[in-house]
Image 1 (cartoon, rainbow, N blue to C red):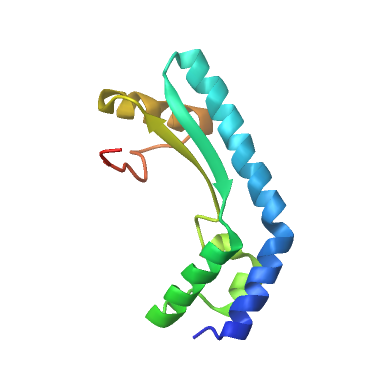
Image 2 (image 1 turned 45 degrees about the vertical axis):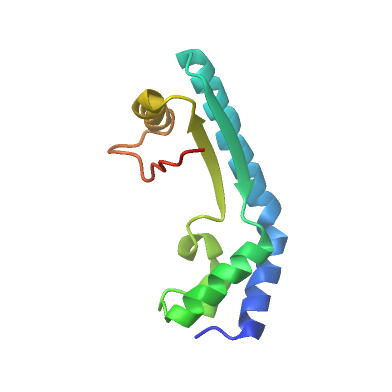
Amino acid sequence: MLSEDQIGRVIEAYRLQMARYEAAARFVEQRLRREYRAAALPVLLSSRAKHPEDLRDKLRRRATEGDPRFEVDALMNDVNKIVTDVAGCRVIVYDPRLEMPAALVVQRAFGLDGSPDEVHRKPS
């Protein structure tokens, strides 16, 4: 189980790398913006790196759950291998009928196969 001291060390190491995750998320957002423009699909895009305090909260939860992957040496070595959402790009469609065409743009842009990882159906 991760101690508060170990979590603090992981967070400090992440802070030093956070700009790299922010840049990667921006790169994905810009590439998708071009792809959606070319496909004439109206979407709302946003990107971000996980805030250090959000990462701290996640590490605390995982430590409490006893997830064996969340081990201090592995996290210090490459937090992105363990915590898979340290950076991301969100695609919001205005019409649910555009979900699949929007997902296909992502798949083509990044050479992915299969269905989208996550589709959130929220009234907002």
